Length: 476
Image 1 (cartoon, rainbow, N blue to C red):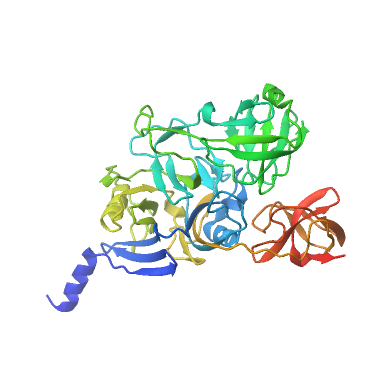
Image 2 (cartoon, rainbow, N blue to C red; image 1 turned 90 degrees about the vertical axis):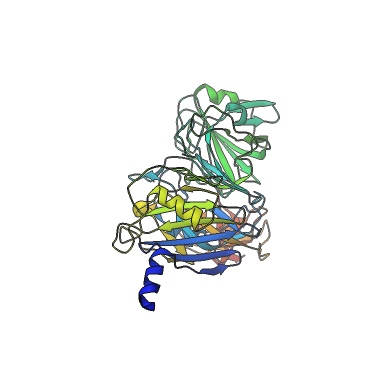
């Protein structure tokens, strides 16, 4: 055998790879694996505390929306993050890479299982979903810890609104879903621009300093700003939520007044994956920064779960060990890259990445990896598919603030300016200023904050409040 043939034979067995740093603590690798699969990997160094993995929500509408991962990547770049404590403190994402997320309803873009985005619990994980070697999802916490969770439930003892003045605890029934009769539902900023319209119930607008996430053993304190009855449609600010109570549950809030404090508690109990009966202790979902549902839990504590799946498809997966967190995609359905079975996916994670734990996300035509805004793989649809959520890898950028306008300053507003529900174009657009108008800069601890490439002020225009870019304001 000559040297050329020998090198060719070796290349068909050994992976061709090289790690390429793409940001401090984040590396990218292309692998030609076993000669018949193209694999793209992003790894994050767990020893670097200044790294963020977060869940992106398509068009910030858990209610139902689809968006390309590349567009989500651009929308989240330079947007505000609650990292590293859960407090909305003015730091921003510097987007580095992204992959597609979990399965979704194709027709309406609806979520079908759980997720935490930027510290907010935006959709509940499915209760009592007991399937051997199938996890609820992964959790990445503010302190950098990561785990894959088992079967979960949402007991009332961990999910309630505490009316501080009245000393009353009221169970939370739903999160970011349409209200049902005699229920209490939380609507976070990721639900939509406003809560659903309703003729039968009350809306309680609450502002917060911290994202309302999974925090059963602690609390998120908020202040009631407004209570409306039998209308719904309350605009949800970026730093608040709406509590909607219907039927006889609405009467439970009769003592609540504007200015009162409330505490939001949310949490889960966790059980074994196979039966959902054996409690799992010592692992808590509290203080989760980001989380997303998983399909298969193909690698657990160094042991591969065997699925005997013979179908090869494009795949998106995550894995980790004590040093790194990996997200990787496998191209498929082509002559160049045939795709992998779940068992081959776990074999790659264990043997090539040296991972100890891993699970699969959505695959097929959804599979995509983006690095610095560029698609690295070849989607099997021959174009990028719109999806409902995705995973972002980012580094934090420091808070920057302008003092050009102070609270109480009267300002002129340029015609055509848009008001948003938060400081940045990634938030929901509320109202376009049709003609040159006047307003007043309202007090807010983040007024003047930099996001999405410009500075933002909280402005009152008539009876309307919204965030306006500094470039559209003139001092009067």
